[in-house]
Image (tube, rainbow, N blue to C red; front, side, top):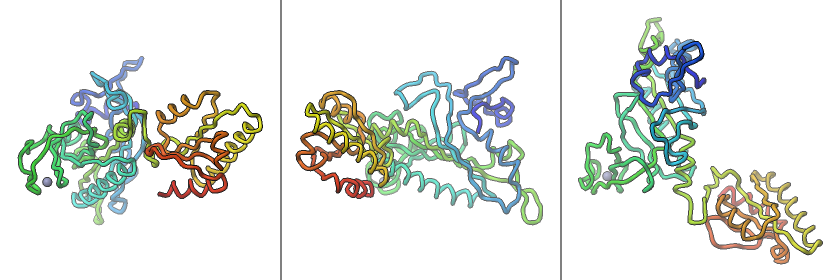
Length: 352
Ligand SMILES: [Zn+2]
């Protein structure tokens, strides 16, 4: 969906003036545009063009694209920028019950997605913000460096962003009675029950079996994919660098190719690295090769900093020990794996 959106659409929903972080730009011909911070103003009239019959509902549309926010104070690197990526989904329903059921499924699916990214998120109640007068749900990755303050129960699912909190720190949890604590989180997702607002603003309704016009309701579901990277690194690092969870690592395997002064050993190192480069992709591993002409210390420090989950060292020493040195970034243990068993071992490790 386009980032550049005509002002008229944002005026229709009343958000041209009410959204303070909306990027507004003027063309050479004085025509005004918004740079989208969200896409309700695009997806609603788009859906209206194609889907009007009860038979076509419910449905959901999603994209992963660039969003803009005119932040007064952009900060914390990728956590709050003026340009960022987002996965946003919009669902359309003929009844509130149907929206409620879909909303619950989307919430569950997003929790699972975050778990696969290595994040344990807490789903908390938050304000509807620029989207809705109803309560929304935020997916918060709990970390002391988070910019959101939460009131949460450590014993059950209960949690609220302080901006809407009815409960206070130290009080009993309304669900289970345990003491509530104050904690910090990075918001990595947010889902909204938009009700009938956007369909009403764009005169979007549907025809039921008898041909009568009936109102629609809508939900939207966002994952901040740019700040997600920041939250993952926040949760998975040590003093040497990043420790990527396997599912979101830019590569699975980091091969450190050492150099040798002995030409015969160097040939053997080169051939081993070439074999790894050829064979590991066949079992689904993405491989980064460090064959720079640098010392071992520098290469190991860079490997730790970049944080690829599995490091394989090919050196004169490793070959003398019978193969390659295998070390996982999250572990301090290293072991020797014979070259002929390497593909199988990596395949096993990828599945684990
Ligand atoms: Zn509780």
